[in-house]
Structure formats: C-alpha cells, structure tokens
Image 1 (cartoon, rainbow, N blue to C red):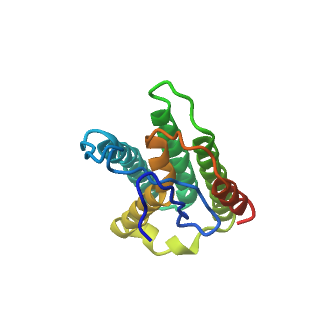
Image 2 (image 1 turned 135 degrees about the horizontal axis):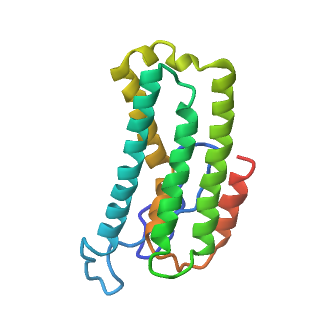
Image 3 (image 1 turned 180 degrees about the horizontal axis):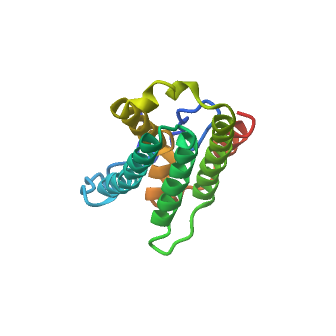
Length: 189
C-alpha cells in the first residue's frame, strides 16, 4: 500500500532481533512543490555518504592490519565499533541545528548501540577464545579477505540505515503506539 504525504512507515532492520521505528519523510513539500535536491533529500544522501566515508576506511584499515597479521581476531569487534562510530556521527548530524534529539531518535539510536555492543562482544569473545572458522582459508588470501571486510562495511551501513536516515532529518512527529510496539518487540527480539 503506497504511503501518503506525511504518513509514517515502520521498517525492520536486517537483523531479525532488531526492530526500529523509522519514518517516511515526504519528498515533496506540503504545498505540492518539489523539494530541491540540496534540501531534504540531498541532505539525507549527503549524510549517508559521509557515513560511508567513515565506514569503508575503517574496514580497509582493519583489513590491512588483519591481513598483515593473518588474523580474524578483531573482525567482529571492528564491526561493532563501526556501528558506534556511525551512530554517534549520525547523532551529531541531528544536533547540528541546535535542536535536541527527539525521543524517537534517542531510543532508536540507543537500540543500535546496545545491539551492536551485545552482538560484537559475543562474537569477539568467541573469536578470541575459539577462532573463527569462516576465516581459516581466506585470512591467507588478502584479496578475498578484503571482500569479507568490505561486506562487513556494507552490512554496517545498510542494517542501521533507517536509523541513520531518521537522524539525518528533523523528527517532530509525535510518538505513536507503533513506536512503543516496535521498541517492545526489539527488547526480547
């Protein structure tokens, strides 16, 4: 069913246990006139581009060190720290105009931070303790190993994209029941 002007949409991130309530911002202003590309839409794309400019250099640096050391031990922790860097930078976007973050922006970004810490800690501890069989062969093949790191970069960018986009735009929509339902589903999910 298509969204109408100003109607909210709720998105589920790629991880089944991670539910966020992101919202749809209309690409046309209330008067029906188009918003210029350097306005709302361009702003979102610019912000996502800035996040990608943080994300992929982190992955390439992680790959360079891991490839030189022939280890996968800090792969998952690098992914978790990348989420933190991207969310904290996206939160800074939201505060650039001097307005405080909305409750929705605070809760959704906090959910990403908690989720990435929990998952990253679990995977990193497991890798340090037992190693990671996914990398046994590829950590000795730098080109193939780089692909794994770049895929992690794509994962970090796409999985939390609804929250990054939410933080790139002004959120003045009042909280609704669906926000609370989404957050409640995130907890046990």
